[in-house]
Length: 209
Image (cartoon, rainbow, N blue to C red; front, side, top):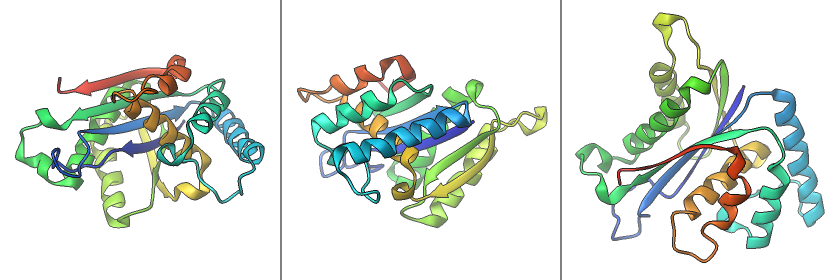
């Protein structure tokens, strides 16, 4: 099993300032490695169809609306599923949420706890850009929190750090996460993208209400 993680918004609590009102983390999973490879190849082909260079990345917030649709329509037939957590910052009162790293770890833990019954020996891939030390701490944190060592159950086999520019499926996690995050806005296209992949959605939790 392959799992890819991405986020939308920032893990900061200055809601009335530059910080975003919601913070979204999405877990995208392929149970079959061959299916993941086929989806990766389809994304690579889409780049050629769009006239993009191989090194260009798919980022939801930087893509034209029609390209977002084309991307999601291209990957929708492949067998994957996703979970997401959308944190409503205005309702979070604990002082612990004031620290971005702790905030991010907490949100990742929530989405993994929701997906836990569906994860088995998963290889988790996280974007390695940013603080490598923090990403390594996150991988240790997740393995300790999610694996049931006492019961001999391995939900997370390994956590890998990779740069998104070299991994099409991390880019896919970005676009799927962006589609989820957009659905919680009042923009005209807010529901359009998430509908395309609705049949792949396992759970999206908005918390607290």
